Length: 109
Image (tube, rainbow, N blue to C red; front, side, top):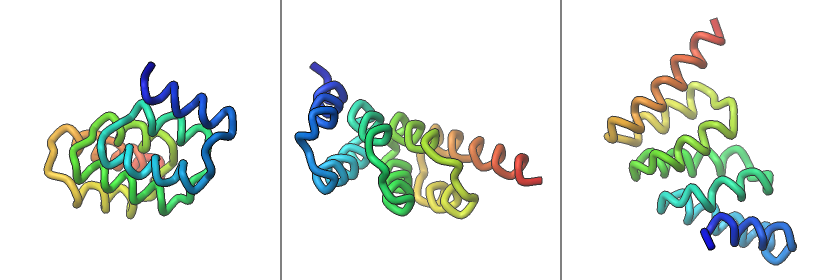
């Protein structure tokens, strides 16, 4: 059974608190476990600052799949995207973030 299925089952049965979900979310984002990040993002309303921190952490650690999940969860500000861009040296992560930033700039003009 994958980690995401287990987490989703626990969330649906109210077996984990919001505090525990937050801790698991942060660890999963930093470790690149998108199968855990995705159901937690869909089930819990984490503060935008928490999601931004997770996005920057995923960028810093080159966690492309987690980054894609987190990027898709919000309409990120240019400031948030720039923070993530400045945190990474991974070319694939940079490409995703720059594309997201370009789309944001285009929609703002």
